[in-house]
Image (cartoon, rainbow, N blue to C red):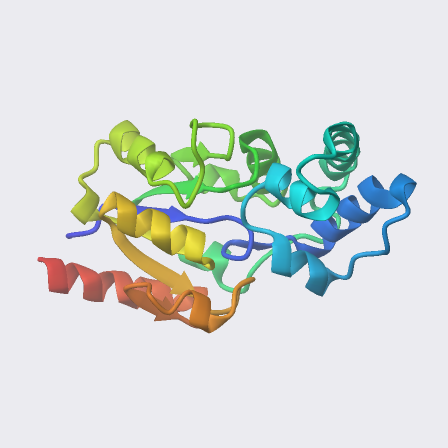
Length: 218
């Protein structure tokens, strides 16, 4: 078997967390008379972590407001992290079938929140390593989180694949020298992820794709 490690993005790839993130943002912004965000508004902005998301909303220079909004977001989101969040179709079945592979999650969500969401959905047990936005000094699209996982699990780059829904996942994977797979059902439009090595429309397509990649790489 050529591929030994499958790295997954979290939000937009394994889980659909759009509603819970939107609700937490609206709670956090309420004292500042921002208009209510729709789920579609949120999806356009997520992907770089909560700090960057809030900067986009309130401005980078609004230091005190940014700190308060962040604290309100984290307080609410921690308490409501899987009210509406669910794994995408086929995710649990695919993870069950990947027993022969090492598996990791690399998210731009904070590590504690990533673990909480996965544990709450009963998915944490499938993974060997969880890396969040605060686990390493840099987050995706930096290759640093991937390089950490490769080192921790003793896997060569050519034996690893990253599966994600955004250009941040693809760019991080390419920078780290690993094979990139983008899912088309996530938060980013197809044209943004078209530079991935492979595209899949359903998570269940991953099983046969990994076999094909193994045959190609030998």
